[in-house]
Image 1: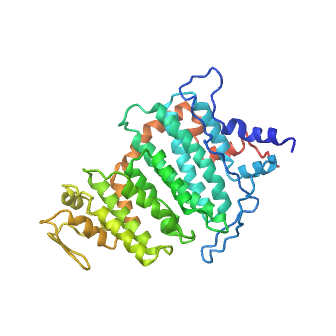
Image 2: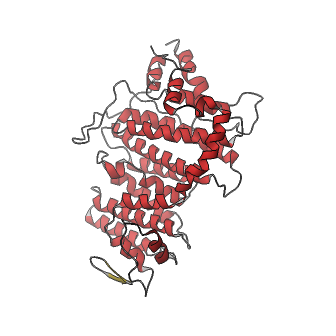
Image 3: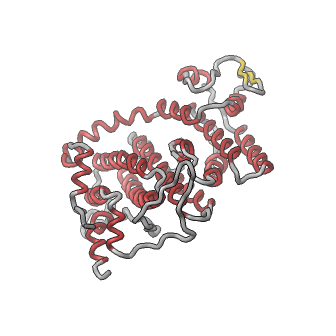
Length: 403
């Protein structure tokens, strides 16, 4: 135990702490990859998998103890060793103002986290570990972007917020899985509040991107392994749709996002095992009351006809019919919301239609000159394959220190 401190410093000292050296430019001096909250370190000597079929989850009633031993900390890093090399690069740019290198690293991290999050599927302890590292890095990216952002309508916003919405979605998935390590259900309100905080803070209350994060979730749409996920996500949807101010004027794509989120909220209420029928009825009344306040864009019909999405109902007819109601669009455009709300839509496919039609399609065009400049500035990172880069990072400053 006497050598614990030095061992940890060898692996995490330079790589994780993003603090500028004395005398460095103070532009980003306040930024740190460390979070304001203590990082919870959990036992991952044997990772516990959640069985998709039986949902048998080996858990304990108490949290796993925090490690203080160097060897255990190093074993943790064996899961995500590439992060040490990545954080070292973050340290190098933390005292600089370089937009190209920032977005190059930002894009690289988004790509790596996609795979890392996939590898965490149904793994309780690894999800908790990666979640902590992800949150720390998100704080770094957020602080740095606030420094380099030129104006309120920066053209590079779409890269940042689209990538950050994906990171928030990864974080929520990891949070949901990591909290399955309790024998007894943890406080759903606590988890919901944490998710809401991540959405509002990291996406700067930009509702379109907050909706995007929700619809990028894995466990909410493709897995039934998370127990009582409805109890966790219900307050999240409710806060987004009720507590967040509803705009008086809204564009077509934002409106369609609203519709899908209302439908998701309805699905969560109807499938919740924690609500009895009276509570469900009350929540659905709140939902429909809020839905009635959603203003339909004046150009809805022309925009809907323009996109002509195959997964959406045909709304360009003068009269629309649902299973129980008839809506005359010529007489009253506001009935569009009720019609779409009653329709049985494939939510994920419909949301993909929205993402494909939005500014997301411009990201490759915006990134191309940035990556080309990064190849000139740092060919050792951006002029080689991703596989080769990760290999170099694995064999870099943290080369097998745990053996």
